[in-house]
Image (cartoon, rainbow, N blue to C red; front, side):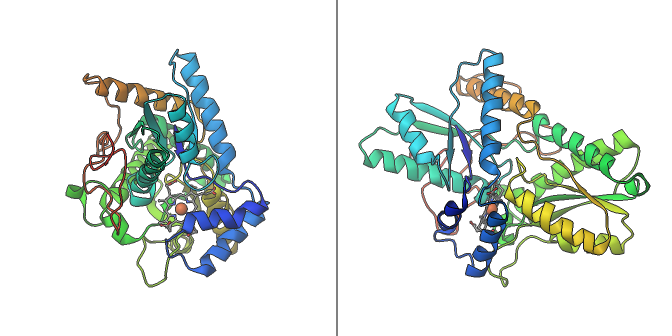
Length: 362
Ligand SMILES: CC1=C(CCC(=O)O)c2cc3nc(cc4[nH]c(cc5[nH]c(cc1n2)c(C)c5CCC(=O)O)c(CCC(=O)O)c4C)C(CCC(=O)O)=C3C
Ligand SMILES: [Fe+2]
């Protein structure tokens, strides 16, 4: 089951969608109005749903081509098809084990535990309806899987090539991801890794370094790089990860950058955070500065990513059968855990979470 964020499919969906996203999360009204405008600029349609439909098609094709006889379904946190409805249908059809793939590659409360909480809520709902909850697992984080990293190396090279030739060699790389509160970053990942930036920052830095190294090898040019952040929300007095991409563009121009390639390593598809916050807002900021920019594509439905997912599914199935499969990973951190340990990416207010060592479900 593809586990994703969900997004509006028309103007009438925008406000109810934002209400779903922000229920009990204390996001300022002003920010919500602003984000609503971003969606209305795109006709009230988030690109994320069609991108997930493409990924589903790519996964089904990849499974079929290799005789992997597994049905692939889709459920979202914030919009139809809701994950509770998908889980109910699968349970009613007799499926007893469901392996989920989240469209978030890294550890963090928002990218991992919150999905696990949503799964626990859904299982509780099914139980309340008299159904026996199925066992639900979650694939390990794939940020450092070659099927995730290599397509982004290629898209970074393509974005560099799209810059005017006279500024290309002097281009900086800005690896960008969703800002989160520093308190959430510091406690991301397993407890033993908690500290400055936690697993969230460490994992992104590992991916950024891998791509920067591959780009240097390919082009023979050393492009200065930095990990930067975007899409901040929340109250201004609460610290979130910085620098923001727009401030960064201004700073590197001051340092003599001739151009910037924005590489959205934090995102799995070119959804709204990419289309608005980078392609609209940051690109306008760069134009104001007179700084040429290009934006690298996310992995989306790249066949190498679909192949990686199949590999991860087979790997997990082998592990579950007591085998010791090869667990592919690039970079310095090694393959991530299969089962989130107790205390991984803790919530501020503890809630039941499925598909982890502290799951109340089997
Ligand atoms: C780490 C992370 C990812 C990446 C991992 C992953 O992909 O899961 C991500 C993805 C996404 N975030 C998305 C949309 C939104 N995120 C919001 C709010 C927030 N995101 C946060 C974090 C993340 N978010 C946080 C800490 C908040 C603050 C409040 C809270 O803790 O909830 C809000 C509320 C308004 C605002 O604050 O901007 C919206 C509308 C969409 C859909 C885009 C589309 O429609 O194409 C996607 C893929
Ligand atoms: Fe978000």
